[in-house]
View 1 (cartoon, rainbow, N blue to C red):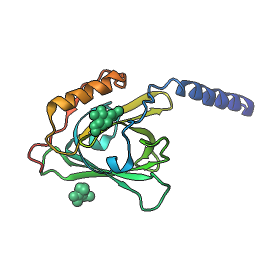
View 2: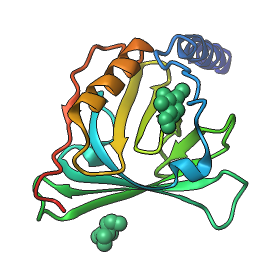
View 3: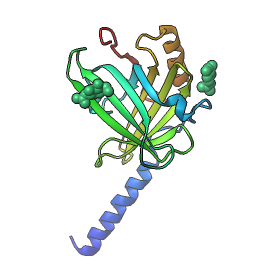
View 4: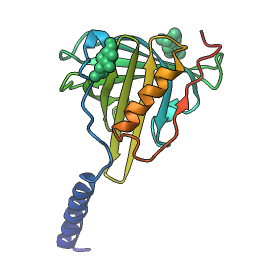
Length: 193
Ligand SMILES: *[C@@H]1O[C@H](CO)[C@@H](O)[C@H](O)[C@H]1NC(C)=O
Ligand SMILES: *[C@@H]1O[C@H](CO)[C@@H](O)[C@H](O)[C@H]1NC(C)=O
């Protein structure tokens, strides 16, 4: 291939990626009007989630899942960390922990989350918050070729009211976030605590 043809090819390829990228399936729901950093910080028990198959592989066999959200000691105001902790397959399974870095908060309740340097950051939005419950939506479009999203429903206790979980699920579905119509999976928390 001549240099000119190679360049044309490269430019065409790059351009088409950008065009496709704008057609990703990630949505941009607003953060909860209730959102405050102090209201979100602390320990959450994952009640359940909706997740695409390509999402966070380390969460695949998780039971007893918790998320501990804390301010970062260094960094810009709002920069936080989210320790995702769970046990592999059973309450006595080994810990599978991964810390996500929540950065570039804008507006409050919406961050970029990154786990590993090489992996693209995802959009991370707290779409519901009250003193007992939180719902978080994260999503990434990989070059517009495929979209991974996850809707986490979290509670301050490990055995939340199932009716409330259903109501929150309905709320999230009502925002149209579950574009692939995936099933909700309850997170096993029995025998963990
Ligand atoms: C994983 O996180 C949990 C909860 O914070 C902690 O108790 C545990 O020691 C951590 N384990 C490892 C191996 O990092
Ligand atoms: C805000 O929190 C209250 C209870 O603390 C709850 O009833 C209300 O639905 C929440 N509103 C939003 C927009 O999340």
